[in-house]
Length: 636
Image 1 (cartoon, one colour):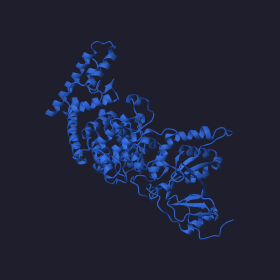
Image 2 (cartoon, one colour):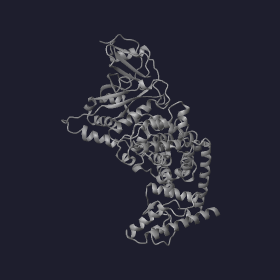
Image 3 (spheres, rainbow, N blue to C red):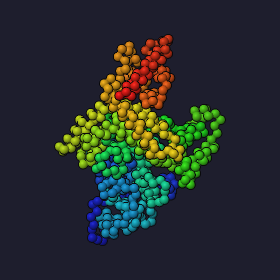
Image 4 (cartoon, one colour):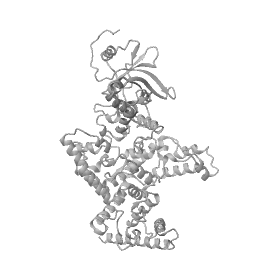
């Protein structure tokens, strides 16, 4: 029976009410809680969205991104081949997982839900409209601003929830393809609108309440990303680039996220020297095959690989086997590079050394080598260490790292081209288009004339110019090149535990190296015979009988004009850079000689008797060429 009428309030911005059962997973107080509800496909369409449908999502900072991009073809295929086929077949989807994301007036996520009080007239209007009886009491003050929770008087595990959609987005974080498949199928078969399905809405308010916590980043989105990461690590794999962007428990991922985190930067500021991040317009967010496309300056996977090589000595932190030797080596690497011991001691926490020693005190390794091979247990440690590593990187290296991209000529030209074409101007449509992935860009339709001009400008002017720049500097722009350059620059500044070292000193030294490199680069570009030096096909000897003798880089970092992506190749490239800038004077590099010898044996057979002798001769010819190049540069 309807309740007595009251003055009705406008509740069009509210969702429908959903009857729920309150579930818990894990510890009854500290575990994860969720509202389990049943609803129709029509209700799903009305009150729930997928992540990329959020308004202005392309303007969100990277720290607030959660979910991988929708593959519309995959959703359509599920609808066509499963939902719309064989009516007699039993069909079922597992429950979708939904997160309630608090947003501001512009639709961007907030760090906290905050407190919310709703007036009685709103409550009574909702009661009347949906006939929610007096057996259900509503929370007059909730830590979830915009969420109304009517709990049953006799059992608080049952109730009705309803939310203000202008303050909270109900985002499907697991099952977006299933959701879109259902909606696609319902267009062709209207009866599917009435199908029922289950949803689990994650309730994070117990975690998000304002509290004293040294980890300031643990806000709503932080936890949602964590849950999404965990769910997808135990099911279908998420693309590596997406895992890097949402992984909160790996220092390399955390550093990579910070390097592309624009926060609430004012894009009216076009001076890119003030960017405290690598602009998203220059980043490949997918990196197919682990490498960025040449129409972008760098990529998410590329950056993470650069960080791992230059600062973590190519060690995969997530794959350190649980032996004393490995743990000690990791401790020494982290301490020498990031100096976190004094931070912990200053904060009155257990020292880094004590923490590590207490961790491996019970590990017995009778034979370190055997233990390393046989151990299936990976080393795990408190995430506070990861956050400290990230903070120390930001304190000492980040500004210098970014300066390499924005100031070193081959990379800086990317910024110049982007600025000239208005990619950094948020008032131009090209700004919005340039921040989209290729898949999103191709899906755009119904553009007005101005938008079409901007899209064409991006595809026909910006992309070709960047691609040409990348091809002309392929060795430097490649994954190998970026790794080698950063290692070349920063390996001289790793001992930051020296109190005399500082971020200003590192930055000043980096600027000196960049200035020297830019002068060298300008010399190459102004000298016809050296202009193609950073291309794999650069010829040093037109009279050579084989490619090894003709092309400078063949046998150093490439074979058959293709880069060999391994540590030996990167070390060889670093060696070349150090030789050019008078840091190394050794005229024989054993790794290069060995690689040339291997290529010769591949050409003439394993029994080629002159392989060693010839490899030394060819290596000498390459070094002599470098010496001549260096001499011409100094004279110029």
